[in-house]
Image 1 (cartoon, rainbow, N blue to C red):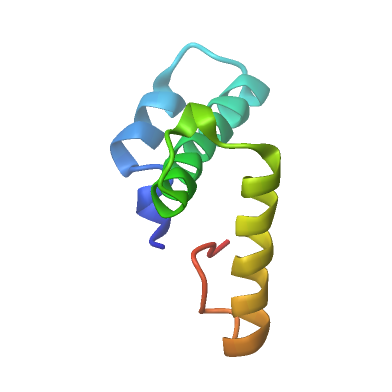
Image 2 (cartoon, rainbow, N blue to C red; image 1 turned 90 degrees about the vertical axis):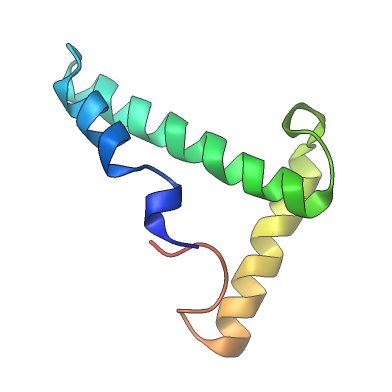
Length: 80
């Protein structure tokens, strides 16, 4: 997954220019990125975002981590 999918440059600029504290800007970026990731997980699980369970989210992270361990750090969806 491309980091641009988590937070576009335009969105990053919107957050950066918002009248928010540094901490609030960080939280806004994390929230937008989290929404994108939840949308991806929901699509892969074939459910609506609001129907995702904590267990499904955790299992998705486990699968992504296993893929990284098996194929290397560039494998999987999460690229930090």
